[in-house]
Length: 89
Image 1 (tube, rainbow, N blue to C red):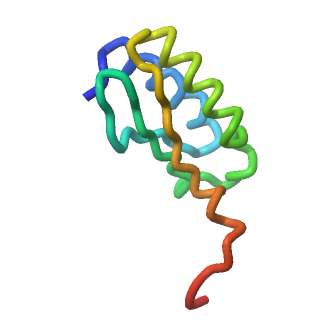
Image 2: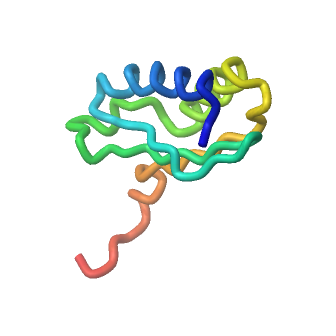
């Protein structure tokens, strides 16, 4: 469970990435860290969503401002695995 201020910050960020069909989902959280997954399943333009490193910078700054106790942000981005060879296809 994340704090109400962090939930509000995440909702604002979801409005932004939602313009490109993406969604940020909480996978795991503690009082000092949050693990998010970038869901691009509804996106018609995944490459339009900001790159992972920039997204992490934005998330870290926004969440730390909303809840100073959050000191670690992790992001699972499916585009990071896109360059790996697919198996069975």
